[in-house]
Image (cartoon, rainbow, N blue to C red):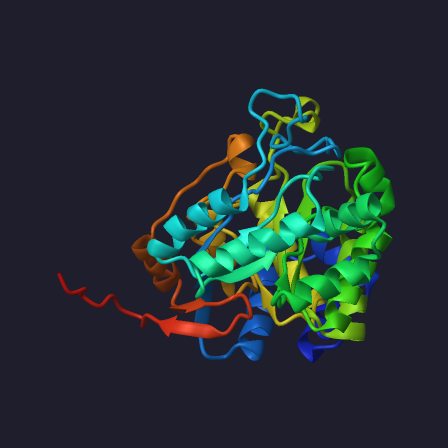
Length: 367
């Protein structure tokens, strides 16, 4: 079987579900799998660049009625530490990040019944007024689905309003695993897998680019990971709207699900999944190896497992922080770890276009 699979990998043919499951289950040694994924990455991006974005992720509210089992961030509206930011408060947070160099704000929050589309549009306007040069990358499919339920507006109409307000990209949060059995187990009140995909289709048809994510390492099976990957690939065949695939592992700390799943997925599992994703998602331009969701060294190794993007520097982040996972890096450290792997670090925007190059060797900074 491994010989036949290697022949298909060498030929560059599209992998099927059985092939993907074999890769996830260890038919090939990890080093060999990484080599295949890295070769596929270099064929797509032969310049030897690794991108990153200087972003910030202030959550506009932590009030959420969905109560996902895996999440340590949400609060009930009566909790002492519950909050919902005003547009001015949110804009001030983004302004601090922009003054420090951030070019993108990833804007997400909880499923808060008190937050309306008008609040969303006010947030966008306040950020644009305070920080006209910052790209606003807001609102995941489950947030849009919940707002649709609360307001009675179709999801497409909400997306069209966001587009009219100047939004051009959406984050791929809330995908978790795009298999309903898994979603019913860990997030039964969140939008369905089919709903997530439908909203992404509508976003792509409206003219927005989006990312696709995966949160694994909990109750899913390898076959369900493959089902998720193939669902993303099928929609990408249809719309070409996904710019990147971004996986991360479940962090057990302080969550309800963490009481039964106490240990996070092993870093080697992350590298195997990353490499498999690069080979299966032959139509998705970019794959991210996240130093933040895993750790700096695992993220660094992911750059040899098919990834060409290193994620964001994250001026502010709270969701994983509430789960007890809060690694840090710096601008210069990020450049260094990318260069250590033989790549040139480049800063990108949310369209994955390069906005600054930093060379393969450090350059002394003035002052």
